[in-house]
Image (cartoon, rainbow, N blue to C red; front, side):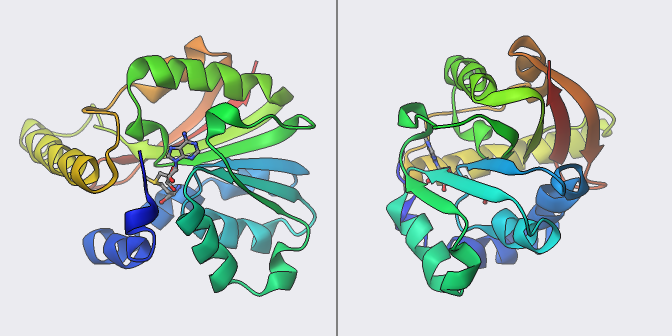
Length: 211
Ligand SMILES: C[S@@+](CC[C@H](N)C(=O)[O-])C[C@H]1O[C@@H](n2cnc3c(N)ncnc32)[C@H](O)[C@@H]1O
Protein backbone atom coordinates (compact mmCIF):
# COMPACT_ATOMS: atom_id res chain seq x y z
CA UNK A 1 0.00 0.00 0.00
CA UNK A 2 1.45 3.38 -0.94
CA UNK A 3 -0.30 6.71 -0.49
CA UNK A 4 2.72 8.78 -1.56
CA UNK A 5 1.35 9.12 -5.09
CA UNK A 6 -1.87 10.78 -4.00
CA UNK A 7 -0.50 12.78 -1.05
CA UNK A 8 -0.32 16.12 -2.88
CA UNK A 9 -3.82 15.95 -4.35
CA UNK A 10 -5.49 14.06 -1.50
CA UNK A 11 -7.27 17.00 0.17
CA UNK A 12 -8.35 18.57 -3.12
CA UNK A 13 -9.70 15.24 -4.32
CA UNK A 14 -11.54 14.74 -1.04
CA UNK A 15 -13.14 18.19 -1.22
CA UNK A 16 -14.20 17.73 -4.85
CA UNK A 17 -15.86 14.36 -4.19
CA UNK A 18 -17.15 14.79 -0.61
CA UNK A 19 -17.11 18.51 0.16
CA UNK A 20 -16.67 18.78 3.91
CA UNK A 21 -18.52 15.57 4.78
CA UNK A 22 -15.49 13.40 5.64
CA UNK A 23 -14.32 16.17 7.92
CA UNK A 24 -17.72 16.04 9.65
CA UNK A 25 -17.07 12.35 10.41
CA UNK A 26 -13.54 13.02 11.64
CA UNK A 27 -14.57 15.76 14.02
CA UNK A 28 -18.20 15.20 15.12
CA UNK A 29 -17.11 13.44 18.33
CA UNK A 30 -13.85 15.30 18.86
CA UNK A 31 -15.08 16.55 22.25
CA UNK A 32 -14.49 13.03 23.58
CA UNK A 33 -10.72 13.56 23.46
CA UNK A 34 -10.41 17.24 24.27
CA UNK A 35 -9.00 16.50 27.75
CA UNK A 36 -6.78 13.57 26.81
CA UNK A 37 -3.02 13.95 27.32
CA UNK A 38 -1.30 11.37 25.11
CA UNK A 39 -3.01 10.88 21.80
CA UNK A 40 -2.06 8.56 18.96
CA UNK A 41 -3.25 9.24 15.39
CA UNK A 42 -2.77 6.25 13.10
CA UNK A 43 -2.76 6.68 9.31
CA UNK A 44 -3.50 10.37 9.73
CA UNK A 45 -2.75 11.22 6.09
CA UNK A 46 -2.84 14.96 5.40
CA UNK A 47 -3.53 15.85 9.04
CA UNK A 48 -7.08 17.19 8.80
CA UNK A 49 -8.08 15.72 12.17
CA UNK A 50 -4.76 16.77 13.70
CA UNK A 51 -5.35 20.41 12.63
CA UNK A 52 -8.69 20.52 14.46
CA UNK A 53 -7.45 18.51 17.44
CA UNK A 54 -4.66 20.95 18.32
CA UNK A 55 -7.27 23.75 18.41
CA UNK A 56 -9.51 22.01 20.98
CA UNK A 57 -6.78 20.26 22.95
CA UNK A 58 -3.77 22.51 23.40
CA UNK A 59 -2.13 20.45 26.17
CA UNK A 60 -1.87 17.00 24.59
CA UNK A 61 1.26 15.34 23.25
CA UNK A 62 0.15 13.92 19.91
CA UNK A 63 1.93 11.15 18.01
CA UNK A 64 1.13 10.66 14.33
CA UNK A 65 2.16 7.39 12.71
CA UNK A 66 1.82 7.11 8.95
CA UNK A 67 3.62 4.88 6.46
CA UNK A 68 3.55 7.59 3.78
CA UNK A 69 6.51 9.97 3.95
CA UNK A 70 4.79 12.30 1.48
CA UNK A 71 1.67 12.61 3.64
CA UNK A 72 3.80 13.60 6.65
CA UNK A 73 5.82 16.03 4.52
CA UNK A 74 2.57 17.67 3.41
CA UNK A 75 1.56 18.13 7.06
CA UNK A 76 4.96 19.66 7.92
CA UNK A 77 4.75 22.01 4.91
CA UNK A 78 1.23 23.14 5.67
CA UNK A 79 1.71 24.10 9.33
CA UNK A 80 3.80 26.63 11.22
CA UNK A 81 6.65 24.70 12.89
CA UNK A 82 5.65 25.92 16.39
CA UNK A 83 2.32 24.04 15.97
CA UNK A 84 4.34 20.84 15.66
CA UNK A 85 6.75 21.50 18.53
CA UNK A 86 5.09 19.22 21.15
CA UNK A 87 4.12 16.50 18.72
CA UNK A 88 5.82 13.59 16.96
CA UNK A 89 5.38 12.70 13.31
CA UNK A 90 6.61 9.17 12.74
CA UNK A 91 7.06 7.71 9.29
CA UNK A 92 6.46 4.05 9.99
CA UNK A 93 4.01 1.35 9.28
CA UNK A 94 1.70 1.05 12.27
CA UNK A 95 2.72 -2.63 12.53
CA UNK A 96 6.37 -1.61 13.14
CA UNK A 97 5.65 1.18 15.59
CA UNK A 98 6.86 0.55 19.17
CA UNK A 99 5.61 3.28 21.49
CA UNK A 100 7.62 4.29 24.57
CA UNK A 101 4.45 4.91 26.62
CA UNK A 102 0.75 4.01 26.53
CA UNK A 103 -1.76 6.45 25.07
CA UNK A 104 -5.03 7.59 26.62
CA UNK A 105 -6.68 8.17 23.24
CA UNK A 106 -6.29 6.94 19.68
CA UNK A 107 -7.90 8.12 16.45
CA UNK A 108 -8.23 6.35 13.13
CA UNK A 109 -9.95 8.09 10.22
CA UNK A 110 -10.70 6.25 6.99
CA UNK A 111 -7.83 3.94 7.87
CA UNK A 112 -9.14 0.49 8.78
CA UNK A 113 -11.25 0.28 5.63
CA UNK A 114 -7.98 -0.06 3.67
CA UNK A 115 -7.31 -3.51 5.19
CA UNK A 116 -8.54 -7.08 5.01
CA UNK A 117 -10.37 -8.49 8.02
CA UNK A 118 -7.45 -10.50 9.44
CA UNK A 119 -5.20 -7.45 9.38
CA UNK A 120 -7.86 -5.28 11.00
CA UNK A 121 -8.35 -7.78 13.85
CA UNK A 122 -4.59 -8.11 14.44
CA UNK A 123 -4.14 -4.33 14.14
CA UNK A 124 -6.94 -3.57 16.59
CA UNK A 125 -5.46 -5.96 19.15
CA UNK A 126 -2.07 -4.29 18.75
CA UNK A 127 -3.70 -0.87 19.05
CA UNK A 128 -5.46 -1.98 22.23
CA UNK A 129 -2.11 -2.99 23.79
CA UNK A 130 -0.82 0.55 23.20
CA UNK A 131 -3.53 2.07 25.38
CA UNK A 132 -4.13 2.59 29.08
CA UNK A 133 -7.40 1.17 30.42
CA UNK A 134 -10.38 3.49 29.84
CA UNK A 135 -8.64 5.01 26.85
CA UNK A 136 -10.85 6.45 24.11
CA UNK A 137 -10.81 5.34 20.48
CA UNK A 138 -12.36 7.63 17.88
CA UNK A 139 -12.90 6.04 14.49
CA UNK A 140 -14.46 7.19 11.24
CA UNK A 141 -14.91 5.04 8.18
CA UNK A 142 -17.10 4.29 5.24
CA UNK A 143 -19.94 2.03 6.32
CA UNK A 144 -23.39 1.03 5.10
CA UNK A 145 -26.10 2.25 7.45
CA UNK A 146 -28.57 -0.62 8.06
CA UNK A 147 -31.36 2.00 8.41
CA UNK A 148 -30.87 3.23 4.83
CA UNK A 149 -33.58 2.25 2.35
CA UNK A 150 -32.89 -0.46 -0.24
CA UNK A 151 -32.40 1.91 -3.17
CA UNK A 152 -29.86 4.11 -1.35
CA UNK A 153 -28.08 1.05 0.04
CA UNK A 154 -27.68 -0.12 -3.56
CA UNK A 155 -26.26 3.29 -4.61
CA UNK A 156 -23.95 3.41 -1.58
CA UNK A 157 -22.59 -0.06 -2.37
CA UNK A 158 -21.84 0.94 -5.97
CA UNK A 159 -20.15 4.12 -4.76
CA UNK A 160 -18.01 2.20 -2.25
CA UNK A 161 -17.07 -0.33 -4.93
CA UNK A 162 -15.90 2.58 -7.09
CA UNK A 163 -13.84 3.99 -4.19
CA UNK A 164 -12.16 0.62 -3.60
CA UNK A 165 -11.37 0.37 -7.28
CA UNK A 166 -9.85 3.86 -7.31
CA UNK A 167 -7.68 3.25 -4.21
CA UNK A 168 -6.62 -0.17 -5.45
CA UNK A 169 -5.36 1.30 -8.70
CA UNK A 170 -3.83 4.46 -7.21
CA UNK A 171 -2.53 3.23 -3.82
CA UNK A 172 -2.63 -0.57 -4.07
CA UNK A 173 -4.78 -0.91 -0.95
CA UNK A 174 -5.25 -4.45 0.31
CA UNK A 175 -8.99 -4.50 0.96
CA UNK A 176 -11.79 -5.26 -1.47
CA UNK A 177 -14.75 -4.62 0.79
CA UNK A 178 -15.89 -3.05 4.05
CA UNK A 179 -15.84 -4.95 7.31
CA UNK A 180 -17.89 -4.42 10.44
CA UNK A 181 -15.53 -2.26 12.48
CA UNK A 182 -17.81 -2.13 15.55
CA UNK A 183 -17.93 -5.92 15.75
CA UNK A 184 -14.16 -6.25 15.24
CA UNK A 185 -13.59 -3.48 17.79
CA UNK A 186 -15.77 -5.22 20.38
CA UNK A 187 -13.86 -8.48 19.75
CA UNK A 188 -10.54 -6.69 20.26
CA UNK A 189 -11.12 -5.19 23.69
CA UNK A 190 -13.19 -2.07 22.95
CA UNK A 191 -16.72 -1.15 24.02
CA UNK A 192 -18.78 0.98 21.64
CA UNK A 193 -20.16 4.10 23.36
CA UNK A 194 -21.78 5.91 20.46
CA UNK A 195 -22.06 5.71 16.71
CA UNK A 196 -23.11 8.64 14.51
CA UNK A 197 -24.23 8.18 10.93
CA UNK A 198 -24.03 10.76 8.18
CA UNK A 199 -27.62 11.60 7.13
CA UNK A 200 -27.13 10.77 3.45
CA UNK A 201 -23.67 9.29 2.82
CA UNK A 202 -22.28 5.86 3.81
CA UNK A 203 -20.03 7.33 6.51
CA UNK A 204 -19.99 6.83 10.25
CA UNK A 205 -18.10 7.97 13.32
CA UNK A 206 -17.65 5.72 16.35
CA UNK A 207 -16.48 6.39 19.83
CA UNK A 208 -15.23 3.43 21.91
CA UNK A 209 -13.55 2.99 25.27
CA UNK A 210 -10.98 0.30 25.92
CA UNK A 211 -12.20 -2.42 28.29
C1 LIG B 1 -7.20 6.40 3.20
S1 LIG B 1 -5.89 7.29 3.90
C2 LIG B 1 -6.70 8.15 5.23
C3 LIG B 1 -5.95 9.39 5.63
C4 LIG B 1 -6.60 10.22 6.73
N1 LIG B 1 -6.67 9.51 7.98
C5 LIG B 1 -7.95 10.74 6.35
O1 LIG B 1 -8.84 10.80 7.19
O2 LIG B 1 -8.10 11.17 5.20
C6 LIG B 1 -4.98 6.04 4.73
C7 LIG B 1 -3.72 6.56 5.41
O3 LIG B 1 -3.14 5.49 6.14
C8 LIG B 1 -1.76 5.41 5.84
N2 LIG B 1 -1.37 4.02 5.99
C9 LIG B 1 -1.66 2.97 5.19
N3 LIG B 1 -1.18 1.82 5.69
C10 LIG B 1 -0.57 2.16 6.85
C11 LIG B 1 0.11 1.42 7.86
N4 LIG B 1 0.26 0.10 7.76
N5 LIG B 1 0.60 2.08 8.93
C12 LIG B 1 0.45 3.42 9.04
N6 LIG B 1 -0.17 4.17 8.12
C13 LIG B 1 -0.68 3.56 7.05
C14 LIG B 1 -1.62 5.93 4.43
O4 LIG B 1 -0.32 6.39 4.15
C15 LIG B 1 -2.67 7.06 4.43
O5 LIG B 1 -2.11 8.26 4.87
